[in-house]
Length: 283
Ligand code: NAP
Image (cartoon, rainbow, N blue to C red):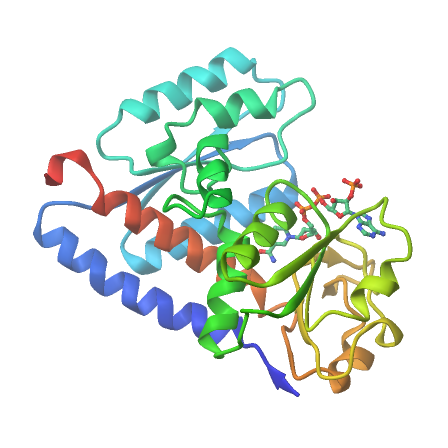
């Protein structure tokens, strides 16, 4: 069994980004990321802090717009409109989830597609489905980058993705399809989940339920990518896979933490750099 070390790869990617940022700096460009955080959810705050720190490490300018939980949707949309116009901001990210009174779709659709570094705008989602260049959501992008780094063949493989959210499961399935894998997307209404997971050459799990994936439902020598993040009562961070029992059966597996999480941040930075390189002022 080999560990898919997302932490180490993310570090390599950050080093490369830092060098590319220095080159852009010489052309008078500092890539800029604006993050919008609504409310005080501690998990969201912690993710936003991690993103800001990663920007700092790589020389990307970042600014966080913190807004109160009871913010009116109109104010949020105005902030996005302002950021869309700001020539120093290349990427705009709205930390999800948003409070219930806010229409998340309307907010995501307000972001200019060329600044949509989270890749959640339907424009970019559509481009992924059509296998066209665009911004790919950071977590699915990080998963594919990690698998390719370890030279894991995707073409022709049976890939099962458990969890079908718009931000992780669905785009991840589309990316695997673009790599010529055969994909199965499982979700809460899937009958007999084990029937599918047992057939997976590559099993990706993005649900948020610790120990959902046990060793009896994983194929021998499977590649297992654990995307889930849950905080246990004792403070430990775990994924969706029963790691101690499943890992001996795998050819490759991601640890949690240290697998997909750091790759998500690295992919966001890559998207921000990409947006900066496409700045209109450069042409
Ligand atoms: P989400 O929107 O809650 O989606 C979870 C998906 O799993 C939904 O499709 C849900 O179906 C499905 N599901 C729930 N219970 C299931 C079950 N027993 N069997 C099969 N499918 C089931 O969550 P998300 O945003 O995609 O995130 C998923 C997990 O990944 C979370 O733990 C999150 O913290 C983690 N995550 C990690 C990273 C990272 O960087 N590592 C990034 C993003 C998310 P229904 O919607 O029908 O209930």
